[in-house]
Image (cartoon, rainbow, N blue to C red):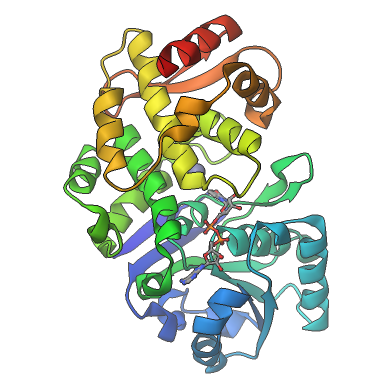
Length: 356
Ligand code: NAD
Ligand code: ZN
């Protein structure tokens, strides 16, 4: 499955399939080996232990390759992680003709992407996603690191040269991580693709662990279409925030790492469906959707136990809501996302009522 992307900086392709990691040049622009002088592959320890050797060998067929391995986990998406990787770039002798290869999930993708965006004012980037969630994070050109005061506060838009998505690598992904990425697929179904949602609804817990490249490509296409229409996030890109306003608040108050992002998102989706209904829209029924989502093992305890006042405070701290009322994405009807503005009283009332 190949998806063409016409980004504002340059066109590129997203290829989804099995065993792509063993012949990466096939999925890169033809002149890539000629135009580049060296590569730096970044991976975390876990991914490196499974795949770094073979990926490195595949790239080494045509270009000099350096590798750099980081500890696994969100902590490396930090100032110190960023500095460490920049030092690795200098050590490897990268210049403006070099490329960074991000082999990993969203953490490596965001960090490697931000390095590629800023090292020598920007060099080439190739995304090789290894998690299900990365079908979301590797598309759209957002890169960045966290600030102690908030996630993804420092970053840049930087489009990759190609996205090479070898879903064979998902075989080693732990179940918990599958459910994380699955949350975003569900979101893409709700906001834009009825057929995708229909297919997801026919899945059961076991089958989540073996998603087809067609389904993944549909989910990628949703993100790609929205992002392409609104690269700089002026308008409809905000629809991707469906379920995320509350999700971010739940994550923040739980302390990062306690609640997985996917779990927070499905909680947020159910509440967003509820808010839509309260506003008089006719989108999917929150109770019914929650029952369906529970069959995958998602817990809705975070939503049942949330403290409305705390949630509101956290939403107001979110960089997307600085100042004034909260902008909320709801469904006016199936696959019809709209942005509404809610004042504090309304939100508090809805949260209290939902818990009862
Ligand atoms: P991650 O990169 O930390 O990967 C999750 C875990 O799975 C890690 O422990 C990793 O070592 C392991 N892993 C990865 N691939 C594996 C494989 N194939 N086999 C076995 N283990 C594997 O996390 P993630 O969930 O992929 O991404 C989360 C990050 O993505 C967050 O920092 C988030 O902010 C970011 N994100 C960015 C965007 C964007 O648009 N840039 C969008 C959504 C999320
Ligand atoms: Zn998300």
